Length: 238
Image (cartoon, rainbow, N blue to C red; front, side, top):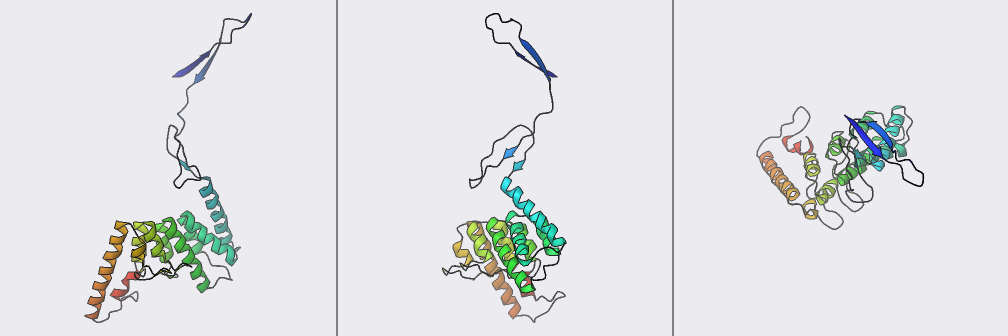
């Protein structure tokens, strides 16, 4: 129905007693908006009525930058440095669509397969750091990256995911054949850097599974499948 809003004019010397009456017609309620404030670890939200929407200015800007680089990649206008930045930006922001487009496009002429593999290794570490399991899977499925290549601190992607307590990322990396016994510069393995019980249980279970697979392999002849994998090589497959 109609919403009537009445207000009377201020009364002063000689002022009329008649107030102004204004009529507003009701419109649909405003959507509920959740604004993510920058600066906090998780952000604080203020709510308004209606549907939910998450607004993040930094994420929007990052995705816009990735999108423009993807367009340049399609047009063959990226050099090696810009290509690296685009891959890493997509991994950090969790933008799977842009990442897949970059991977599907031809790499710049100055990016050799070995250099591309290095770029993907950095993107893998950043995705593990941010907890983007689907990005990890997309990168691993290229088959062009060393899942256990360490960073400057000696941490592999599995170290990073385990320390962050992200079980989904840990599962993805384990399925991709991550090295369980790799040690960082402090001499710690992935399970040693984790304080998350669920993550530690996942890694422990994978240790047992791989040992069982090795025992079975020693007692059976090696059979190479269609894809060239021996059963014990399936650690690197999904």
